Image (tube, rainbow, N blue to C red; front, top):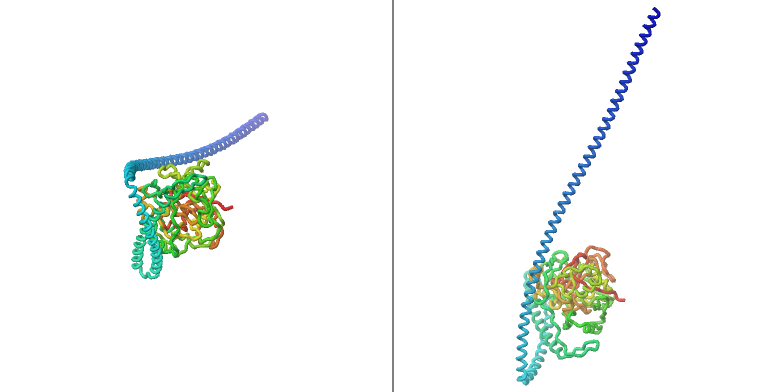
Length: 589
């Protein structure tokens, strides 16, 4: 029984152990299952994170790809626009080239016709001269008697011209007094218009008579000079003087067609308008400049020795001296130190505008107020810089040629260079050992000690300078009339620059040429209104910085109101204009 109980106890213990073992195994299995589930959950979470990261990278890649496609599309669009613009520019350039070629062919045809006509005329004149020589042998006595009669007639004509000149001066004085009284007596606009119209007609008649008398007088002087010997410097031989070349006429200038300038209405223009008034003398108390017109040849047609002989100080007015200075060897004029009144008054500008319609007072606001300026002595080029001189500069440097350089009809050796920027002008003057003149230096050299409105005096004369009225042969009394004529002139190639020094009767009191018309000239100064500057200033050179540079003197396209020595024009310093050139200056040491 004991053994049986022991066996039962052992069996019970065995069962308990088996139960505990089974329980332990279940617990181990449960633990392993939980661990496996945790591991699977961890792996699933990591897989989810990996998938999310892959999805994020894919989204980023898709976004970048979309942006790249958009940028590529934008680039292709820009390239297409650029290509279309390039094609348009190419077509436009080709059209311009074809138009230029057509104009060139027309000009060549016209030149050939002119040459044939001149040749025929020369042959006719040669035959006529041969016939005259044969008749001269038979009529020598008659020629002698005719010469004596001609001398008597010339003496009578000289007396008549002197009387006419005295009458003209008397009429001019009476005219000034009448104009002054008329201005005071004007009470209504209708009366003012009637008087202005009558005065314009009278002045036109007087101007025509003055020109006729001046032409006759000049012809007599030239005939007298033919018989006088001319001394050539440097030991040359004496020979009979020849008649100087006439100033070019509107029919024989080398034509070109730059874009027409825009006439000013409110502010000073960039491309200047043009025209002239035939009756400015009403507004000034000084008599017109009485200096006789010289008959020197244009600088481009003179031998160097003759040119140097003309530059002796005793041949120039007052204490003015001359010099050859700089690499370009352009003649320079010494302007003595002194003071002068710079700018215009409001009354003067109002007087100008009264005779020229369509321009507002604000277009000339930059000229006022007048102020007293003191300058040290300095040199200034006697002539504008020509294409011949500028070519020497280009050959010595690597600088690009100016605009219009390849235009053969426009690019003449002794014409003033134009189409240059302010920086081009500065570089040229620096290369030649000089500098650009300041605005004050330019105005003093143009006006002289007398403070003239124009370089030659206070009265406008279209035959003393190259402006629109020189080509038109008539005054312009309004901006509209000028613009209408100028557009037609440009279309026909009728107007343009001339050789520097062409108008020897239009020099300033210091002997400087082309200070009005031909081309406007860059000066050193940045543009600044006079109002912001002191009324008394010594050696002014403008503000230290700015956006626009000043150019002075008007061009071949302007009217008289814009060719005055006080008129201030402004332009972008990088602009290459067919109306702007330059001259240089140098400080006096």
